[in-house]
Amino acid sequence: MTVRSMNRSLPMSPRPFGGLRLLAAAGLAGATLIAGCGGGSPAGDAAAPAGYPGVTVTGEAGTAPVVTVEGAEPPVELASADLIVGDGRAVSAGDTLTVHYTGVGLNSGAVFDSSWSRGEPVTFGLDQLIEGWQVGLPGATVGTRRLLVVPADMAYGETPPLGSGIAPGEPLIFVIDVVAIG
Image (cartoon, rainbow, N blue to C red; front, side, top):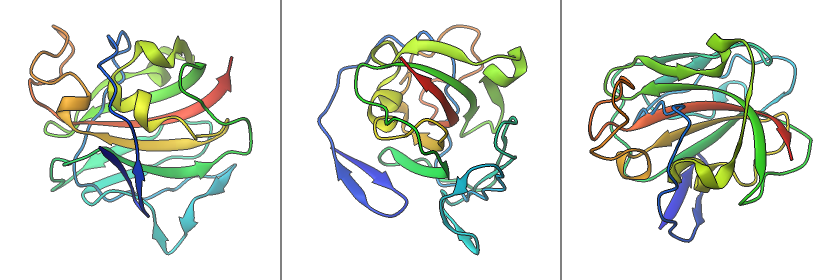
């Protein structure tokens, strides 16, 4: 199994689904990302921002991202891109994290959950979340804003939480700001 970074493929070991208790699953496949982020180091070349074809992300560091999906194709594998690169401690498997996030359905283009709308970040054990987060967040440093485009089989598959707004089999897009570790 591999994780497709916008710049490279990374080997990873398969993990069983962790019972994701956090409805932060915004999965878009094939998206173009525009990182209009300030207050941090934007990743990549400003003229050619990292991203996923068909997904656009805008927003300054410390503010809610705006995710737009247009013509994105479902991902075949987990895709990851750092929109802002932090300079703090790196996330490791099993860490407890404090994050702000926005989750968007790839097919619907609709936000289904966001800590930003509740006005405060959330804290959870990484091993309590969907496989896409467990595999896609290690290596992100405190201060990083990471885009994850998660295939349905690494999210909720055919059985999303009732009332979540996520369709069965829907890939998800997440924009995750790592606030703290531990």
